[in-house]
Image: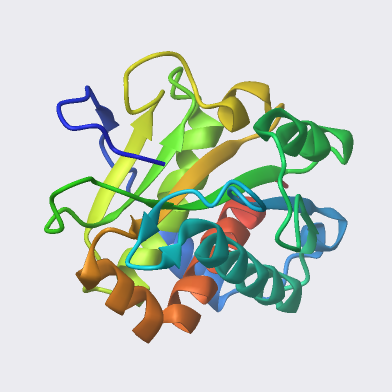
Amino acid sequence: MVLVIGSLHIIKSKIEIKSVIDQTESASLNPVVYQTVVCLDAGHGGDDVGAEYNGRYEKDDDLTITLAVKKELESLGVEVILTRSQDISMDNAPRAEYANLYDAAALVSIHRNYYEGYEAVNGIEAWINSQFLQEDELLAAAILEVIEEAVPKSTIRGVKGGTMDGEGNYTINRVAQMPSCILELGFISSDYDNTLLDTYFSDYAAAIAQGIYTYIQTFCT
């Protein structure tokens, strides 16, 4: 995704759920996760490389991160389906429709952000439907909360609704029939964010998985 200079952002304040996360981390596995399906979507793919910076393609980062999150979620007992597990092209609507078909409890689409011409812009944010449905916001906030704890050097930009240009909703969030969010895991145009992702890759993957797991245990019972 490309962040347009001067675009209007609808920003929702971060939901404080630290106590819930702490309780979940200390709890035993909830049996509900064994009957819960989570859909992970690695953004872009194939001919659609997404954003590009110094030879680094967003589609590659998206897939690598998604596969690592899948592994972490499965270690927690969560069943995971993927919209893509290889470097293939896909339209956005079928990604959400696939999650709908399997009646997934949550859909998380993983991307990298981009800001043209200004490398200093950095940070992690999540986009949800412009209606700011409670379930969507809780899912996105849970993920961001754990990331902030796991990698404190990350800049957390919060949960945002709609699209970067203020027009409607992204297809993933519009078509999904379950709680969904688009996670922008740092700016690929930022050397700072790229260094963080490369250095703390495993921490990011584990944090995203833990955030999703927290949401499932807390709100899908």
